Amino acid sequence: MVKFYAVKIGKEGPQICSDWETCKKQVLGYPGAVYKSFPTLIEAQNFISGSPTQSGVPSTSLSSPIPTLIPPASPYSILKISEEFNTQQLPIIIGNPEFWAKISSLSPILIYTDGSASPLTQKAGAGIYFPQILWGLSVNVPGNQTNNRGELWSVIYGLEYIQAHFRGANLPPVEVIVYSDSTNTINSLVNNNVKNLDLIALLKFQKNFYPFRFIKVQAHSGDLGNSRADDLAKMASGVL
Image (cartoon, rainbow, N blue to C red; front, side):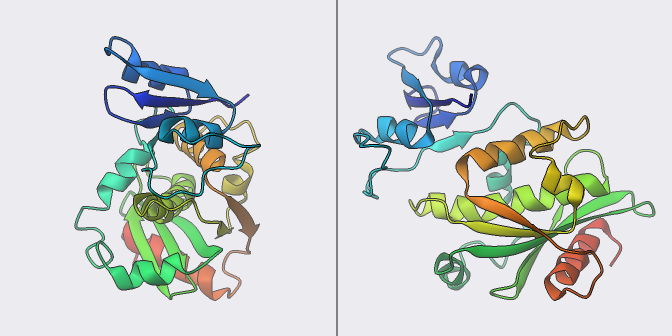
């Protein structure tokens, strides 16, 4: 059973954690810590904001800040993804109101994702393509440089790239439809995998918070969105 640990007062401010081990680092030994576990994210958010929960319906007020979401222990935390938005890797998009105005008006948001790995460069890459606005991301992959990790990371990065903006604007998560040609990535939410558990844990964590679903596409079938995501992944892996 999934639990959400709401930290109203803790070492690093209001937060919602998905496991007790992470939560206790924020509250144990901290004077005046206030925290509580809940079965739903809505109840956890309302506990922090002080809004009452009425039949599971969240408060519609946007005056209360959305708390930071803390994923399970992993060397590649979702929080780190947000920090990477400030690097030179994404110089055009950061602070670009026109881009976010286009994205914010869409529901659902569509993304094509793909991964790539090259034995020549020994690098893996992840590509995320936004067909509704004809724009894409080409990003590096953490950890082992494999194609499967590139596939997983493209989904994780794409989802957090979108939702971090909505969270920062004090807006609820938006629905995202993810087009992927990776059966392994799509099935990772239900299969008992033994590889890439760190990234799979992040993807499962995102599934608890973000409304998204997969649509399987055939690789190298002429689908324009899939081809664009493939090119972006290859750019990051050094193939293109």
